[in-house]
Image 1 (tube, rainbow, N blue to C red):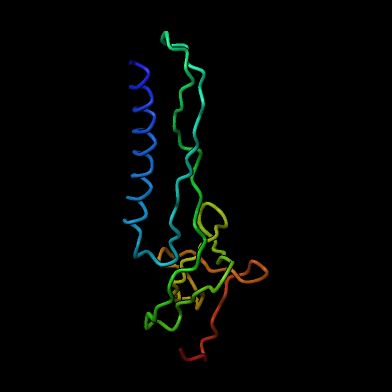
Image 2 (image 1 turned 60 degrees about the horizontal axis):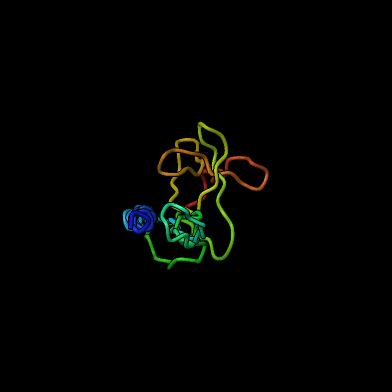
Amino acid sequence: MANGVYIAVSGAQAELRRLDVVSNNLANNNTPGFKKDRVNFKETLANAFLDDSKQDKRFVEVAGTHTDMAPGPLRETGNPLDLALLGDGFFKVQTPRGQRLTRGGTFMQNTQGQLVTTEGNLLLGMNDEPITIPPNVAS
C-alpha cells in the first residue's frame, strides 16, 4: 500500500513542474519574441521490492523541458525600428555579461544613433559591430 503513495507523489511532483512551466508561459504571453516551454515526461519502471507483492512499479518524472520554436503571430507596433524574424534565427545583442541571442525585436536609437534594446543593449550586425542609423536618415 505504501508503494501507491510513492507513485502518487512522483506524479504530483511532475505535475507541479508542469504547472510551473505553464505559469511562466502565461506570465510571458505578451512578451515580444517569447517562446513557450514544454515539459517532457518519462515513465520509470522500478522493480520495487518495498512490499511483499514484488511487482514492478511505474513512476513518472520530468525528463526535461524544451523550447517550442514555432513562429508566433506578427503584429504591427507602430515603431519603425521594431523588427520581426520570420523562421529560424535570432538577434545578437551585446550585454554587460557578453553577447546574447534574443528573438525580441523591440528596438530604439540611443544618442549615438545605434539600435538598442529596451534595456539599452546594442543590436549587433553581421561583423558583431553595433548597427548605427546615419543621422540624415528619416524613420
